[in-house]
Image 1 (cartoon, helix red, strand yellow):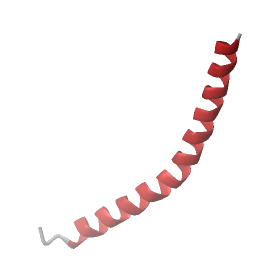
Image 2 (cartoon, helix red, strand yellow):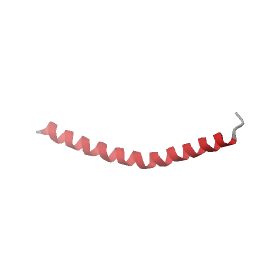
Image 3 (cartoon, helix red, strand yellow):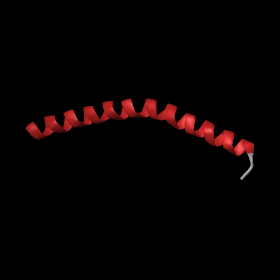
Image 4 (tube, helix red, strand yellow):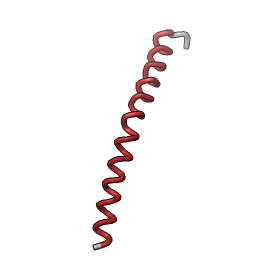
Length: 45
């Protein structure tokens, strides 16, 4: 339990995850919007 490198690694992993989410979320929203508009276009035909 008293491993300092484990704590540092966990903190770094959490920071990396937060940074990744900041990139992934807008991309996912954009892709979702494109897919939604394409599906809507197909359904309206």
